[in-house]
Length: 217
Image 1: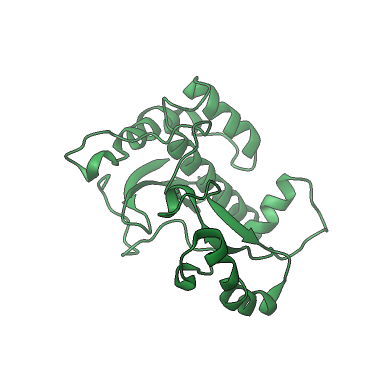
Image 2 (image 1 turned 45 degrees about the horizontal axis):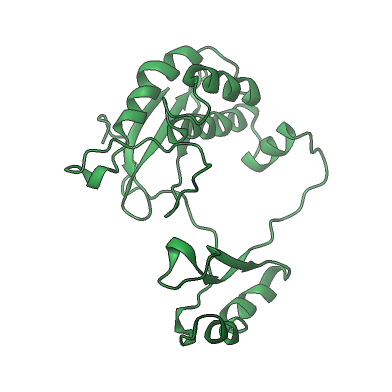
């Protein structure tokens, strides 16, 4: 188990974890990070050094994974996702994952999940379905269309962070998301409609090279 610091799609540091199985298969998890964090959410452990990445570095969480969590979970069955996740929370020992950081724990969990799917020779979505006991009721996800932002995501006074619709499926959602929401913005904000946009799922983190770095940054 090896963690490192990388940059996410916003250019901010985040945690990436590799889990190497004894058969040589490797699972990798890159932790997504939102623009805002609720007061009741688990702790995203940051370094706090304002001179480095404005305090957003994650080397503390990386070290906790490499020095504490990783060595203790080596040898566990990657297919036992729930048992490993619960064990990592026990290692952390805090109610909000403040010691290791939810970002570190999530990175390990994601990497293990992908490694387990590879070990079984099945797609990741099918492995996740199996973990939930879903054997045959498979459906494609319905895209959510973000029609207006509020809260910390915007410069308006709307309390809700995001207003989304997701009833339409497939190709019908795209033209709806691009054109239909426009009449909503001026009544809600008094502003023109050019700030509306369609938010589709994106990768949690970006990598500029396929070469694994030897250092933690």
